[in-house]
Length: 292
Image 1 (tube, rainbow, N blue to C red):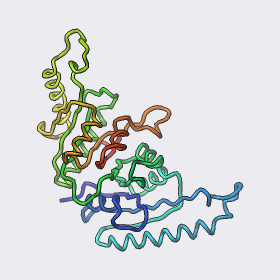
Image 2: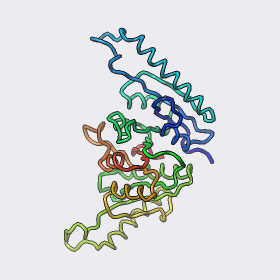
Image 3: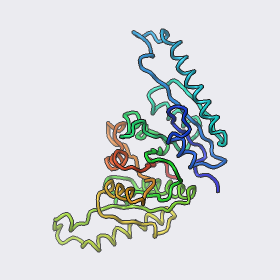
Image 4: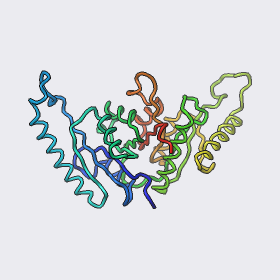
């Protein structure tokens, strides 16, 4: 089986080959996959003093050399892979990763939050602005994915473009081809009658669900997927995903990261943010322009 991901950039933290981002990347590769380990080094206190950047140049060089040696150790530990490693002094993190992605023509970035309780500000910016999909590894990568859940919104109730749903399904399908996992296209909704509003005799819960399933199956056909992959659930998407993860029915969620407005560097959509914050499940964050 050929690899879906041909060029992966993995953001590493230290020289431990057992770190989550590295281990998950290993499970998403094959012999033809190029894995680029990236350690972005930056210490604001060593940038300079009173505009003089040269004053700490020797210290910066020493710190970077130490990190480069640790990278060599990590690359050596992963010698069975087609892997390279690089440590560089740069900031901000998201821009440094974006440059590496463009230089290498990478098609995936893999990160694991430094804080077990959630993403840092730099992590959020990276997920929000990265030009390719970002796999955020939150669970312990002790095995390949068994259940892939693609969260889609065929009714575009949250201003998600059709292209984004197609991108989500394309990457979910490719991830399935790589891992052999099951694939569900998840659409969550709140029935009209559950809202307690008449809407001048709205559709019943049953007819509402039928209409949504029909629309979801149309979307699946556009994505060259079987209608049997459609899954309707009642409730908020982040709550449903959390329940699926707790029941062992979701190992990774593929969903959209749609930046909006003047503060787009900080926001990627409330649903994605809630899933990334609360659910103990890996998340593959996809952008609209990554459809193939």
